[in-house]
Length: 472
Length: 94
Image (cartoon, rainbow over all chains, first blue to last red):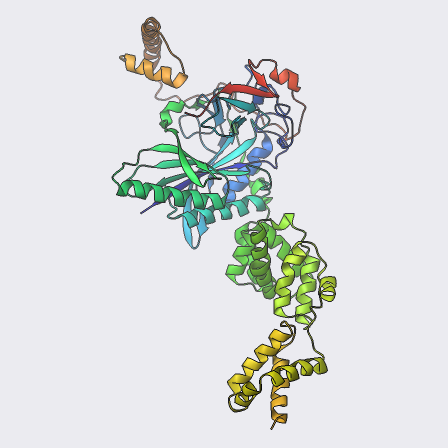
């Protein structure tokens, strides 16, 4: 029995400013240490003040995760010594005397199973560490960029309810979709979501794997860790409680440090941040103004477009796909077919190229053109599928089809010429076909091959049949 | 409460400090004195008083509006070691 719990950190990177100061929360592409002030540098005497929209976002996420929301916003100091945290404490939330997390006791449903969420903390991100050798293990010193220091984060902690790597991946995907629908996190930005994965196998201690950057990596890191722990136990090695680091390039976990116990962080309420009593009306107002959530969007896609549950889930759990579907559905009304092509063909081709829909040149206009050409019989199913990678590259499908001679041959004379040629080369087969109708299909196949599938098989079958009747 | 040398050593580890034997002995005495003060405070009858964690009742929040911070030169002015615009800190790998 494997037990997996996640601590997911998500950047509140759609905020304009950091959590406790008015520095911009957009730290990308800036020179190091140019997006800082006394508060996020941790200079003595600087006073933090909470960003009100960070509270709004935390309340929205807590509501979406079916949680009980605290009516007091309070912050604690978590003490540790590390170069990325110049104050020697991180401002976070804590469940203890005089302090509380923003929300408790929620859940997300995965395949009909409830994964419980213990709590959400609002906290600040530390500075970014750069290792001169590229590796934390071999660098003699650390270089620090405080541009990221103080960015608002939510730490979302689950109960150990996940039982396998795939479930952990699905959990993160559903969570990502919720955060995208709430416009709390822009996942195109680097480090938008990171997870610490707690993994324990039967007969071993809990091992924490840090630095997991995506749902896909979570699946890989947890699978690796389960295999490593089981192999160790089989050879009689004890699994000790420790923290490991996920190396996403080598796809392995490496030991980091022995785990400090919780009391060593010496939490206490931050005297710089008096508690804030959140008025009931504020919470009600935030909840009322919330955008549509994945759960209700799935229901709506089923009702409004007649999709089945699987289709609706796949689309909504990758918000970009759902947005693209709904945009195309304004013009193209065969909704189930549209959903199928997006899920099976478009998604597969995007995955092959390892690009996101948003970063491709695919337009709803081009996809609709391709589907319409197949609908009116101008192109074959195969051509339709072959066109998907072309339109992902932004190529106009109508022009491409004409330039590359991909239109279906409907001209009877042209098809008869091909059929005559096939028949004359296969006299023996033709004789058999006259006795056994199944052999006719073989001839159809040969003709289809000859025209590179650019014909309607039903039409070819009928033409061959009438030809066979002519031959005595 | 007895303050043992083991506790002092643990605090040294947590605080990344290395004390001499003499300093350790001084600290033991200091901490004993500090804890004695608290023992006196502990005697106060407070069973019918709500705990107070902050003298200020409720704080205010800040609008989410960007303001200019420090220049790079100001930001790095107090760093003891700088390299290519970064602050240089100790190694973190074991």
